[in-house]
Image 1 (cartoon, rainbow, N blue to C red):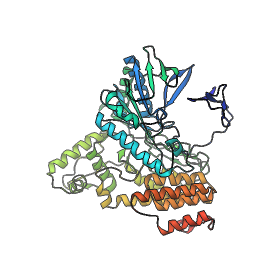
Image 2: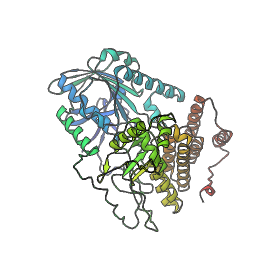
Image 3: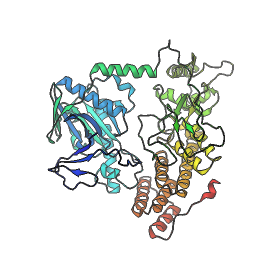
Image 4: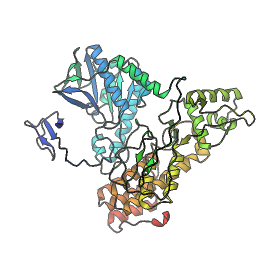
Length: 564
């Protein structure tokens, strides 16, 4: 009810409105105003390492771990364990404020729920150090290429293309990680937290048995947050029961969607709640200011009347292929088992042993029993619906396997929304296209072992679908003078198609329409930097468009004929 307070490590008297500096200027405050307008957020997390560390003066205290870079923690062992569980659970399960992944090393913390947190991974000490060092080096190169002094400056770019998440490494071997303190500098995309004194680190947190703590060199005293081992175990059991219900429980089929009220369109699109989120402006076409979640029906638009009873397919199990292949809100799969599911979901027909042999083993000769065993493990991991396996047993006569009805890929769902958009008005089409783009989490089939998807054109078709969806939404949005949605379309498109020239040309046109010449130049520079790494250059058409826009000789033009 009282608002926000921002604490500085040195006085800053010139607070920009609506902030005001408190006496001494060591802090700014923003008093709570229930009537103040809240702008829609269309950018990634700006302070990606933000996490709750405890309470100060009766108020929640959050700390930017990326701003510290490295931190050693000493004091009471039990209090430290409770504190570390708290921050790992928050970062591993949340994405509204932070955007972080957590890398744990053996012995760093006893956390029962680690397997249920997709943003948390466990590596041995050597692998974790190499991973953090590689991430920091790669990000520093990207910052140098575009002339940014920090990740904070990068995230403040006029048109950020992709989020920059923070990799938080938690180690129980401080001495072994001491060499990382020179790498984990403030606002460089990584943070190293040591359960113990961390040599070389400028920051240190000491926690007493009663939970009181002091952070140096900031001189900040507070009472730390904490989660005990029993709570962590109960949470792990709860999540495990949700993911893998006991065999004796009758798992009922998903109820049919409730018929929408006239004038509404309900779309049920699965969204992994732990993936990087890109907020969608709420005022444009009525979308909510978050990514769409399949578990709850979402009203896409108050202003999108439908002229028939069409509804999108409601999959019982969604296979994500627009990004790293996984099953959304489903069981964790082994690498080869996930390939089996992806092949079967893509083909959309009974799959022969030869299909699986080609995809999983690259055509290498394997005995039939090896394939049977692989399919059996996949069947067990997928589980059952209504007493029947999701992956049916083999048809002995045809020697084929099939998935139960209700399994669907995100590519097929995006295609369905795209095709439907062809048959409706422009305003309805924009809502459908934007709903489809929320499905894009990365380049199609972004994992090892999916060469078959390239060979059989599945990856190419998915890439073309992303490009067509994004560029169409850009054109519809610009015709409606909706710059925010146009930018969102390009951001999601580039999330799946990094370096795509068509999308970069669209981005330059968007910023030209917004009157932002600096952002036009920034977009072109990002494209040239990306192509430089591939020893390539922008096409003549892209270069000509850039020259025309920056010289002021060309105003924004639209090619609507492509979509009629």
